[in-house]
Every structure is written in C-alpha cells, then in structure tokens.
Length: 143
Image (cartoon, rainbow, N blue to C red; front, side, top):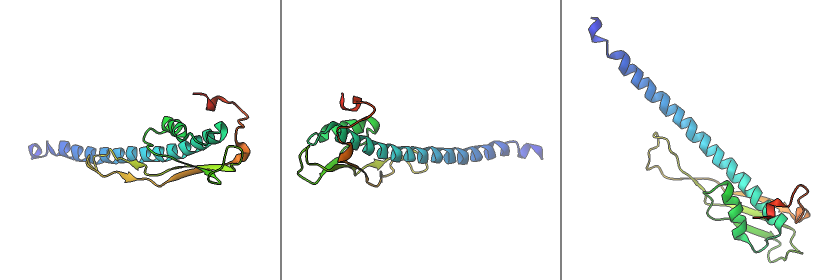
C-alpha cells in the first residue's frame, strides 16, 4: 500500500508552492502599485516646489524633467499659474498636475497581456508666499 502514495507528497508540495508563489507575487505587485502612487504624489510636490521656487512661469518642460527624475513613467504634466495669464510678479500660486498615469501588473495571476490600470490624477498647489524663497538651499534651481 505504501508504494501508491510516494508521489502524493510531491504533488501536494507543488500545488501548495504554486498557490504560495502567486500570493507572494500578488503582494509584490500591490506594493509596487503603492510605491508608484506615493512617487506620483511626491513628484507633483517636487514639480510645484521647483516651479514656485525657481520662478519658471514659462518652463513646463523643466518642471516635467524634475518630475521624471522621481517617476520616469510621467509623460505629461500640467502647470497652471493662478490667476491664468499672470507674470512672475503677479502670480498668486501654481498647481502642478499629473493625469493619464497607468500602472502595469507583472503578476502571472493577471498575465502578461493584462491591460494597463489607470491611476487617478495627482495635483499639488503652492501659494506665491513661498515663491523664490527656499530657506534651506537654492540647489533645487540648479541643473
């Protein structure tokens, strides 16, 4: 009777390992998504801070470059000075926004052909009272 159950342990181990690995990979994927979420929020804060401190009212590409350093998946950014059409002397603040950011799962549960998961928009507003004033350093404005 013993010879009929020799392979049962191996099969049970293989099935248990498969379920365990899918669970672990699901946790890793979810952690990556939370990291991307946090990095997108930090990128908007960094972009708004750069725009306000460095007074780049017309340099949206420089703001995007600063944000891409934190999150390379960012393709477009919106920089809106308030009130619209203001100059460096009359602006009251800036809003930096990211839209259209997508997340790609890598877990085999979803598969390699899984569609991109759209993330919500992220934005940060900073008022003019901090414009051109960085009490710690002016290094943010240097390239």
